[in-house]
Length: 500
Image (cartoon, rainbow, N blue to C red; front, side, top):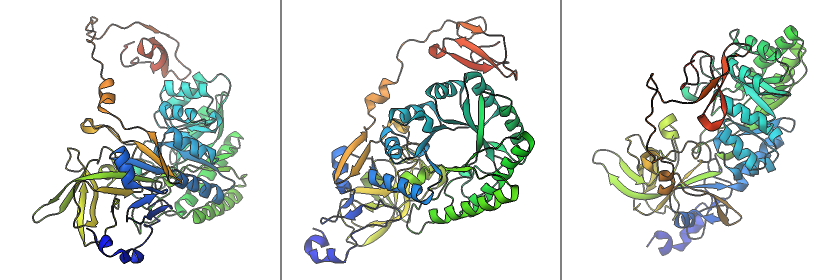
């Protein structure tokens, strides 16, 4: 029996809500002391759908979309699908007036299946394949962001009419933070650095190709940025580059995409981006930069992803064991971990945790919530406060898990990925089912391998190499049995299977 059951009057002194900085707005304790999101008790979801389970609050996603459109009424808001791309979420953001950014043929297929108009889709990525570009062109995506000279060559060969494109530039701005997400510095894989001649060469190549309609520049500074001044500096540097294009080529670029990276709080007290301050900084920078270069104001685009879905998500786990290590920590092992949340292992991310099936009405202990996967670094949350009487079978909830959790999930240890359950208005529904063992086995090919080899020791394959290279001499069209379609290959080495 708990203290709440013995002394019901204690409820009047307990908070009815949890920290709104990291939980969805509609998060409360119900009369039984259980955590509810969207009017649904999380413990009930755990009982119905098992654990681990991703929960997402639809209304929270929609409210975040509306906040961006309200603060940036003249900008195009493009949802960064890599944060969480499933049909339901794509549909929600589309209904709220957002465009959608995709970075693979798979994400493009999901966006189209969700009913997003092709013209409102932007294709990103530093390593687009010929096949992905072909799919995007055939689908009629609105814009393609070019990230390499090879992409310029491939896309030019695919387009029959005209295709609107942006060029991704690296502005040389270090926002600090984790090295793996600093994408605005010069020495990293994305974009063309403005500190060298690379950006100039990219512009010249695109402008030489009439089938590519260069409408603007794109940049992305990094992730979890809470200082808006970094975006002001990006505006100034990018406008200077746009003015240079007008001066040297008599072409006026009309769009400036500043990417995303707006910080959210993962724990109470964490810094996050203030959208109103960001809007003011961008406006001031546009005014001053455009006046200085006498350049017409371009249309601004922003690409929030994490800032749209992170706080809408909660992950549920079931406690498997509580282990007190003599002279060390207390470890609470749960039935999920790095398979459903890779961010701790990748970036050292920190999270808060609460017991979802009852109010923590007793003394607290400091514990580390550990995952069930076979890695010493499989930690869900380190040094968090949990009830001293925590026991196996109870449900733990981790807030702010809507972004880059499902997206980065794996089947490590052959454990299926969790389902996604939407909540709202006191109801829940399954958006994505749990991955089963049958799903894992179904992908395995059990037929005998083809051991026929050629004189060189490689598998014999039909091929027909077109000897005509493209204008830059970098690619040739190869027709082989791979995927029953043509793809592009290096002129020197073939497609990796074919030697020319």
